[in-house]
Image (tube, rainbow, N blue to C red):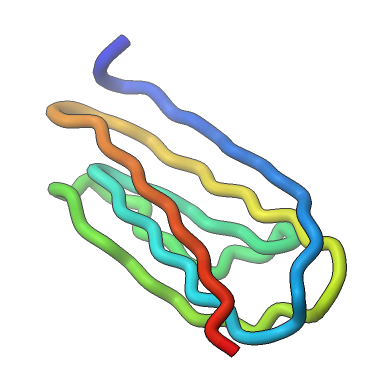
Length: 85
């Protein structure tokens, strides 16, 4: 359906140690986890907007999980991550 759905993306990958910038753009709500710890969230209805968080990540394997829900209107989700240092 075009409304009232949710999605979960999960990926495990190797990281170079350092500070990472995670940016989520969403229309409605999201939760972003690194190794099952919530590092960013906006779990409420909203028009499209961006939320950014910078966190240190150690070198090695880590799991990133992004949950998203769509209520009504437009459905839009964007996700980026970048090593800053």
